[in-house]
Length: 77
Image (cartoon, rainbow, N blue to C red; front, side, top):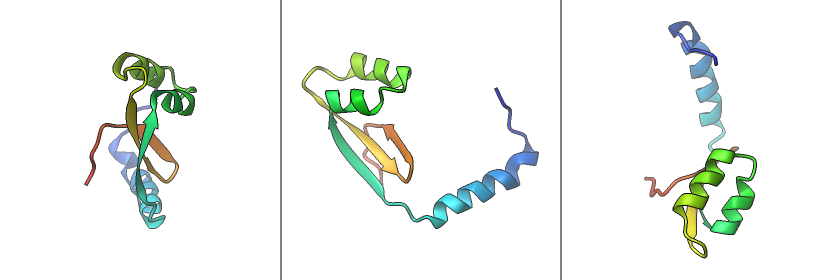
């Protein structure tokens, strides 16, 4: 994989600054296990977590901010 060095700091900061300028809302999503399995079907790791940690018929939560969406128990402040 790639490594990050101090020389990358300005590029990384510029990327963060662009994200912040977007003022994306931070959304909490409640999903059924089946909905989450469908949403994250592209990610084997998340599918494994969902299958092991979320009982059948139960709900889980994900958080969305802009293009980023991820499983998380939350809550977030």
